[in-house]
Amino acid sequence: MYGSLKHIPHKLPYLEFREAEMSLNSVLLVFWISLVLIFHGSQAQLSSTFYANTCSNVSSIVTGVIQQAQQSDTRILASLTRLFFHDCFVNGCDGSVLLDDSASIQSEKDARPNKNSIRGFDVVDDIKTAVENVCPGVVSCADILAIAAEISVSLASGPSWEVLLGRRDGTTANQNGANNGLPSPFDDLTTLQSKFSAVGLSDTDLATLSGAHTFGRAQCQFITNRLYNFSGSGTSDPSLSSSYLATLQQNCPQNGDGTVLNNLDLTTPDTFDNKYYVNLQNNEGLLQSDQELLSTTGASTASTVNSYASSQSTFFTSFAQSMINMGNISPLTGTDGEIRSNCRKVNGS
Ligand code: HEM
Ligand SMILES: *[C@@H]1O[C@H](CO)[C@@H](O)[C@H](O)[C@H]1NC(C)=O
Ligand SMILES: *[C@@H]1O[C@H](CO)[C@@H](O)[C@H](O)[C@H]1NC(C)=O
Image (cartoon, rainbow, N blue to C red; front, side):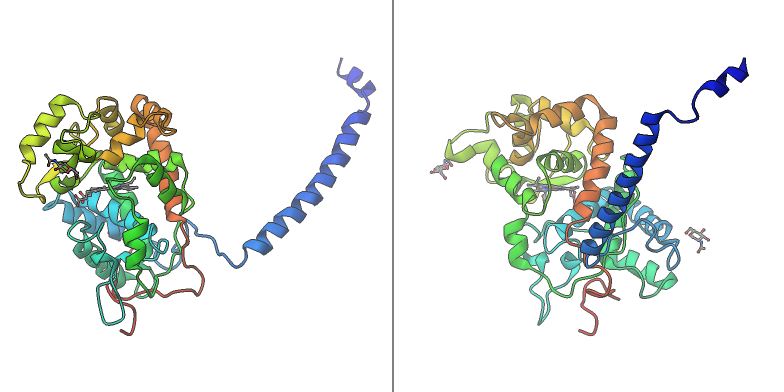
């Protein structure tokens, strides 16, 4: 029985032909890979094992500090996640958002979208101190923001992912860049899309990363126009559900304190889940820029919103990927920039 196999030719002619074709392909493949590597050489890649030999414990150190901060500040997980976004969108992920105003620095902290709004700097300082105690001069402030964002999302019951590392810290800030490049809650969808596309992020990234508004808070000043005089109409935003409108008007009276806080996600304010997208389906997005992802006529982001509303796991997988995409915005690598010893100051200043 087995003997009959011997009569089958060892290799069929067409298989030999395919093998020859494949080895030719392999040579071409090696050639193309070499070319790609040569052209990429100047632009070193981030890597998940960047600190494996120099600060293998960095992630557990960061986790410890964040958990400590969380005990007195439930909002800190959201605030740290937002810091990474505001860092990456201005001059790339280079820790520039952390620099204080000084003789030589016009800080991004004082830019319109940031002033009296972004927070968490003390916790970043505490993280930096804890990391410096164990691995001095090794871990950049830019990477601390990337690690802190992942840990924050994960501690809030969201997805985990392998954070790519190896960023170095910038020596300049870009206040104009922060004023012009960061999205505004009053931007229309087209403007949001172009601000994302300007940093190499897609409409899918826009719809996905906006899902970070599943936790954290926003001040009344960013929604009063929707509540009382939308686009100068003298009335409220028609894409806001009437019951949610009533709730928000109660919390944010017309000439009241604009700094009063609202939950970005009315359903599960401190949990990282897909309820943000369900809220949009119910016309319960807090910011104009949130609701537009679904309610703008013909929105290219609408199908993404609907798919995440019906599948949290689809959202989680995409969110991890989009955070990696955002973390890849123009990092300084190799010998560019520096490892700041104090996240608030350029070394030697
Ligand atoms: C798509 C354009 C976006 C706009 C227009 C926008 C706008 C805003 C605004 C106005 C606030 C409230 C700030 C305040 O009240 O002081 C806020 C909060 C927040 N944003 Fe965004 N955002 C956008 C995208 C993102 C992205 C991409 C992320 C992260 C991946 C993010 C994460 C957060 C978080 C977590 C908070 C709450 C922060 C806290 O409670 O401290 N946002 N955003
Ligand atoms: C890493 O950190 C954890 C928790 O902070 C600690 O228990 C452990 O001993 C540390 N390991 C090293 C090698 O420093
Ligand atoms: C609404 O805004 C428009 C344009 O900014 C303004 O002219 C109008 O007076 C405002 N209406 C109210 C009721 O505040």
